[in-house]
Length: 324
Image 1 (cartoon, rainbow, N blue to C red):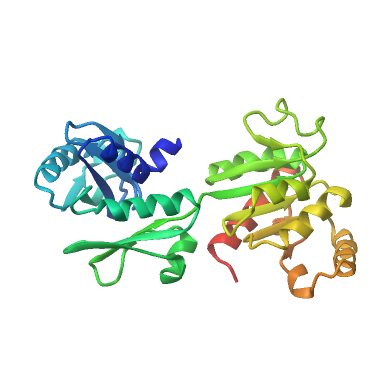
Image 2 (cartoon, rainbow, N blue to C red):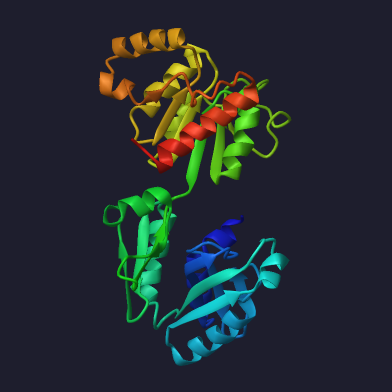
């Protein structure tokens, strides 16, 4: 999905500053097979122009009509829709459901200063929550410490009080792969399908070529130099696949100095024991070394490159969504 559609708050701010009167519609609750997940957004202006989606086309028309009225009177609205089985089938679902959509005109129900602060945090890749009452409004921003489980699960939604809506805005997920090897050719599309922006590092042009990895961002620097410029963060997974200490070790040492949520390294138990010895000699502690997942991937019993890629992706998902 393009950044234009995933960063609708920034687009809403740009439209407002350009003199367009706008409202943001956000899915706040769903039941059944709702076409779009909680947190999905639709941006509408006073002339009916729009970007984004709250239902894949099922109720957009009705939301636009309500949005134009909301822009005119400056009042927020909480809309409820039932999506019929026929409407759901038209957008690729087996059955219908129900959705609640919050409409907030920018400049009144959604203060411009608050939207500006939200966009600024997103642009700096900082996690931030947009919190508001579905009954009384009064939105505010909160940091990740306020809702740790929701940030970990990327889970926007209504709290147990039935009134407070929390929209989670997390930095994008990234996977940095060191080694343009056969396993990477299988792992990359899996990671992309799970929402990760993938960066491939390999200083060997014959390996990391566009012909072998079309459309993938390839960095030809040495891994430690590349990671220094990429600045891995808590939304980053790093996987080393070269099986060559000259390439993997600099990447591992650099990764252990960051707060990446996952660091997995290809190699047998014997290979990893040698790696651990080298890291100990370099001064890394047992706790730091213990962060490494090696041999990489969950033990699914697979041996083929595609099977190993599946096991790696499964372990990455587990580390992100269900950390021990």
